[in-house]
Length: 463
Ligand code: SAH
Image 1 (tube, rainbow, N blue to C red):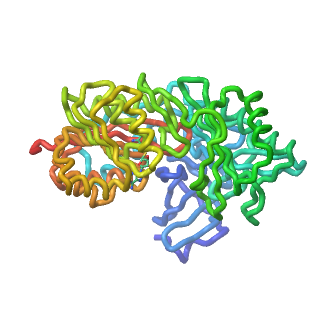
Image 2 (cartoon, rainbow, N blue to C red):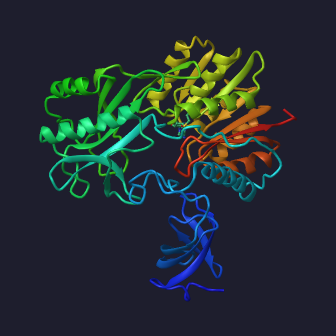
Image 3 (cartoon, rainbow, N blue to C red):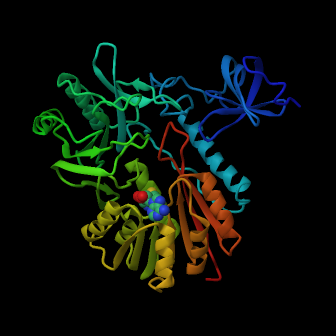
């Protein structure tokens, strides 16, 4: 077996790719030693040059593709080799879906030891373009002195200026082009990470799928934007669909896009969107699923798995703006809805959204999920729920929360996850404590990327 000592930087090897990493890199072995190669697909054979060797893996760059996968396509995107956004742009869409589904199945089996369940085939898009309802763009200045916008290249903060992104909404594209031109024409400075100078850091654009509406959040390094009224008037002329504008002040040296301070400067405070007939108002810093068409698929799957009975009680943990619980309460007659979420404005949105959709008996609590659930349990505010929905961020639930879920003794848990690895780890814990995984359905919310959403239905017959 080849070891670390045998594999040397700059040497050329031939490799056959076995699988894809979660970031979409081809993974193969050179005499047992793991090598990651960006841009290669399973089954492909290539000549590679080793560019990095660590104690547990190496990284290679393709010098010659020898055997090509039938799933390989010529990327439709002109920036695919530079932009860090779409790691699956060289994979045919159907094969992307198969890859994602297989990744979910593999994680459940390898990490969770979970093999015995009904797999509902991944739900993909008919037309996987222009799907994003939220985009955030950094700016830069080109050699002609013009302000340009785009995305960062992979694992760096080098700007790749783009004219058109295949996943972006046309309204978002219009806004970023307008902002770039406005900054150029008005000699407003662009923030430079290398010296923390310059005013404009990012523009975030949220678009409504239902209405022809958009929200614009201009991220500034300080609250010194010149002639705000002139900017708003010009924006309204070029982008009349913009119904809400915020400034966000981020004066920190950080990769995090949004700072803590929001200043509402024009129009509505919240953007209205509709998922399968249910209305949601969204604050600038609240989470909302990024692909509205596929969110319908996601929530319909949650509803199907939940199998809500009349007068059921529903606990929606990590509820964001209340979406899943309110969706269920709008479609079925439920007795009580309780939601937990730690972003303050999202909780305020959830309360408004329950009213907007005429949901009574809904309460939403602000705070860390584990802390709030502990407290509610302690006060006996929550004893039992017929259905518990959890939709945590990428890191999954912490063990204390899983322990509380077991304590709540719900007969049904619906777990919505954006990370199959943490999902599998959490399911392992729940299955070791009385629950069984009955149904699993992946949903593709992020075509051309390696990300996948999964809905899991678990039951506990003893509860
Ligand atoms: N179910 C919602 C939101 C899912 S995203 C929807 O489908 O729209 C996950 C949510 O969990 C986000 O709103 C995020 O703000 C929230 N969150 C992240 N960590 C949390 C924590 N420790 N406690 C409570 N909420 C948290």
